[in-house]
Length: 133
Image 1 (cartoon, rainbow, N blue to C red):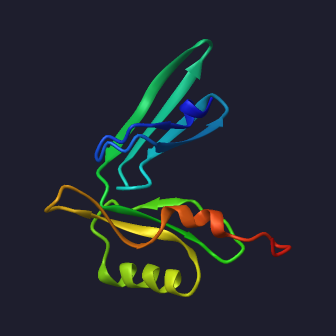
Image 2 (cartoon, rainbow, N blue to C red):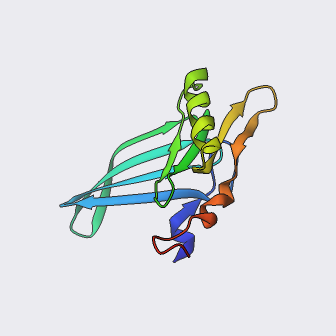
């Protein structure tokens, strides 16, 4: 169900923090990341028969997030777990200025919320396919 692919962010309260899951053998991992502020929660579980045991859990405060989609390409969302360096912010802005799609946010300590610095989260729909449509 679509409701199983997101949950509410534990930092900025955005309703659609993304959930990614992986399984290998008896072990699984679940990562929740807010595409707005970068808050991330990670859990590992071990399954034994019908029960599951939480074996590892951590939560990281977000300092912003970004997504970069190269022309004709695809990429995932990324989070900052420390304030990003000016050079990193400049490099992401430069790629967005060169035609890459995506966005960049940073956490504004004074306002207690994320701030959009560049791009748009909705530009992902502007990416053309290989046949130009």
